[in-house]
Every structure is written in C-alpha cells, then in structure tokens.
Length: 301
Image 1: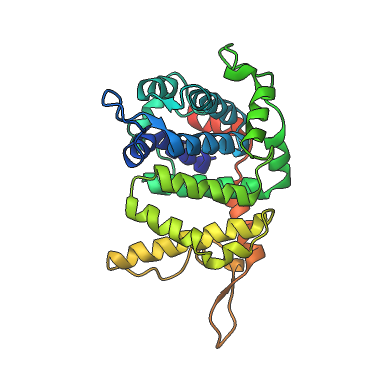
Image 2: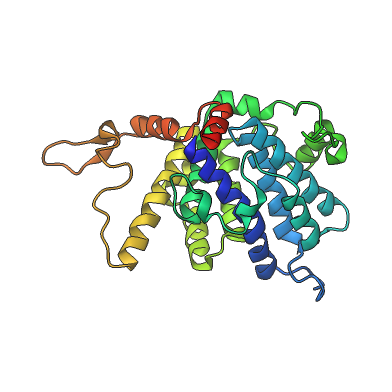
C-alpha cells in the first residue's frame, strides 16, 4: 500500500512537471509565444497513450477512474485542436486527486513520501507496479473491464460520452483493451523519453530499450514475467551506474539476500545467479498492493 502511494505521488508530480519538460523538448509547431508550455504533436500523443495505459493498470479502482478523467481531457485536446493549452491542463490537474493524492503533491511531493524519498524512487515504483500488473492475467482482465457508467465521482459525465467511445478511441489508436506486458514496456519507454526531466538519464534508458539489452527484443509481447524482470535488470543497472559515477559501489543487486534469499542461487565456486521465478514472485509480493480501501485506512491513521 505504501509503495502504491509513492507511485501515485510520482505520477501526480510527473503529470505537472514532466509535461512542462516535454513541452520544452518538443515545442508545439508553429510555436505560440503566449503559451510556451502547451503540448502538441508527439508529446501530446504520448501523454494520451500513457494515461490510457495507467488508467487500465493502476491497482486502485479510484485511481483508475481519476486517471481516466485526465486521459479524456488530453484526448479531447488531441482530437480537437491538436494542442493542449497549459492553463487547461493545470486546471484539470488542480480539479482532482489521483486516488488519495492531492494536486498539491504535483508542486512538491517531498512531504508526502511513504517509503521513497525522491521522485525517481517513486517513478521506478510506478514502473514496477505497472509491469507486474500487466503480467497478472487477473489484473489484465480487470483493466479491460468497462468503467462503471462513464460518470465521474462528482457526478460529471466523462468527456466523449463514457467508456464506449473511449474504447473506440483506444482501438483507433491501435491500443488493445487489455495492455500486454510488451505494450507496457513500450509506454514506459515513451514516458521516459518525453516526460522525465533528466535528459541524459532518458537517453540511457531509451538506448537500453532500443538496443535490445537484456534480451528485450526476444521477449514475447505477452511475456509478463520476462517484461517485469527486464525492467528489474535495467533498474539494477541504473543503480550501479549512478553509484559508480558518485564513487560508490553497490555490493549486491536489489533485492539483497536479507530481503529475498531464495532470489539468488549460490553454488560454491560459481558466480551467484538469480532465480527468475523467485524474483518474479518477490516483485509480485512487493508491488501488488492489497485492496485500496486499506490505503485509505493507512492515510487516515
């Protein structure tokens, strides 16, 4: 539950700050001097795809509804003028929470972290939650189910007349009703390329994905365990690279033996190997939260 809260904090922060980053990297053409942070073109298309994915995989029904509302705002702009004005987007963010995370966290999430202490930690948590959710057939069936009735919690009808029209829009964009693990990794790549603030980090991640490192290109689109473990390998590699750049050494990949002894196979005289089945079980245990009503009790405690 605490990891889910951190993931949602990172999401809220990214939707405010990351969209500004994307607008600077990929300005609207022709540029509008009066609205330099408007989103359009590839950046807006990627935002729509990202929100659609998260709205189908976030393991909180309340959170999925909130993200679906934001997705409708972005999609409406894309299908209308093709440009999402900054003021309209900030208004949409300020009008709603994402699950139990308020819009103020988009300005500064620092006071609200539960297990993480940084935005990047929260973002990795979100990525792990999404890949594990995409790997779980039950979660995927839940994600494919229609929204209740296309009505937001405050009584307003969602834009585009609810889930039926929204689903037709997804199909027209080539997005499956139930996100595959392969689609999930592709959307994470798109998010990092467009919305992550550290440009050098973004280039590293995209290069890792595009060059098929850790066997990504050999993965079947439906290989949930393989996709979750691919992201796990990338995460450990990034941690080791950053530690090296700062003059530190990572003694053991995450999770270490104290957290998951069965994740590692130790044979005398041979290098320590990782156990894919045990590691995937660990990721599932760590990143599949209980029912979101538990999160409510934690936050209200």
